[in-house]
Amino acid sequence: MTELKPLSPAEAARGLRRAGDAARGFLGTDPVTQNDALLVRELVRREAQVYAAGGALVGCVPNRAQPRQAYVSSTSAGPEPVRALLGHLATYHRRTSFVALVAADGGAAAFLGAGFARTGVLPGHRYAGHAFHDVLVLVKEEPCRS
Image (cartoon, rainbow, N blue to C red):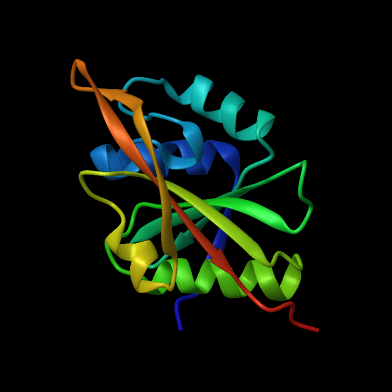
């Protein structure tokens, strides 16, 4: 099982910067175009929790309109860090519903491998490389753990 190590917002910003393109869109941020101070401010404003998971970063922000739901992100191409994050959130934060917004041209494999289902597309939702790109909406429901 992948171990999660909690990161401070400043540590998360440095980790996202190192992840490069894999971190684009991570919890609504863009470390390719945003500096560390702005990344830290955005992570704090969104109440993000970011963890190191092996060589990847995973994180979540709460959905204030639905207390048991969280938006999740990962820089990993594999599903194991995502599974570790979901297990942690279900066990310790009683989150049971998860939403991931990922680029349609890549990034969905980790979430699909962790049991997420593709539920929609946001056409032209992400701007990168001088063009607008589609974003996939992926959802997973977990049973509540005692």
